[in-house]
Length: 367
Image (cartoon, rainbow, N blue to C red; front, side):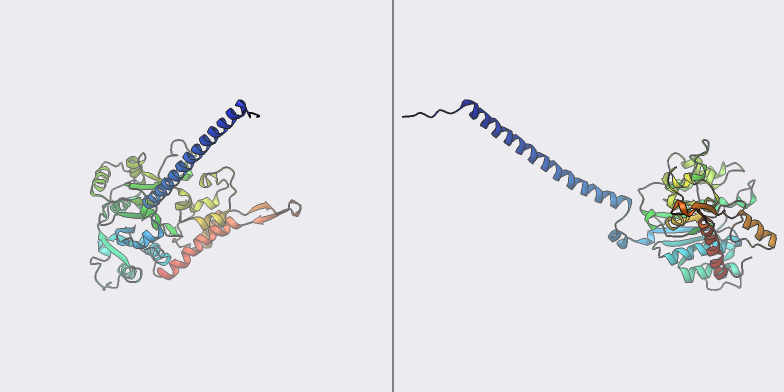
């Protein structure tokens, strides 16, 4: 009778292999469990984040949009039509928020009346109310003697902080052309104010953190408005709304990306665009940049504001000389040489032409 003997070494190897398999299987199970948990957590927090930062399309459709508003302030007849044009654009773009126009009471003392009394100002206000659904709010201008008389009433803009019937308002200067509505900004995380950087100053070490006030997202409150009013009383005669807001909020404001929310028209006249693009390597494409922009601020010194009338041939020639220059660029194939690229000039012209065309329709009486 032959006795079969097991190989102790083989038995030991089998046991080790079995244990190793069990360990590997156990580790695999643990890893899969952790992955599933993290995946679900990631989905959960993604949903929570989207709820806080930007409402989902379903949520925004169910929002009470009467709690949000775009605001314009008017201090003179010259700016009235420009403000109405901006509010009309928001109406045309399909913004769902209210549109509020703050204006001097003398223009139309009773915003509910249908009698403009023959006044161009009153007729324009009634047009805004009846055709564009604008809510009219008569006030007394917030005036303060300043070095620059044209900006002496600029503190009126700060009345937006007192519109406490709204959860949030977006205040835009009248010399801004709106290309797309910005309804998504109403759903930023809570903060007293959000403003873009004055990006054209980013290379200036003393001014690089300056906030610009031509587009602001404001959370109205009695506390903040009272704080601002007290600061206005202490303001120097060369300190205006933008300077005051920087003193109050430079370190605490939420910063809006200037691209795409706050472009200035003079960008098209620049030869170096890295401050706006936020990149040293991205190629400047004026058509693409204009297509992505939400607003463009007409800030183009010495080019006059687009509602100013050019009375003489010399005026026209002077502006032509200030237009963005065409550039020579290499064609797709280097062997084909160069060609003239005037896309920057054409985009710049388009901005001004669009404004003048809309002004011709809305402000035929304006001089």
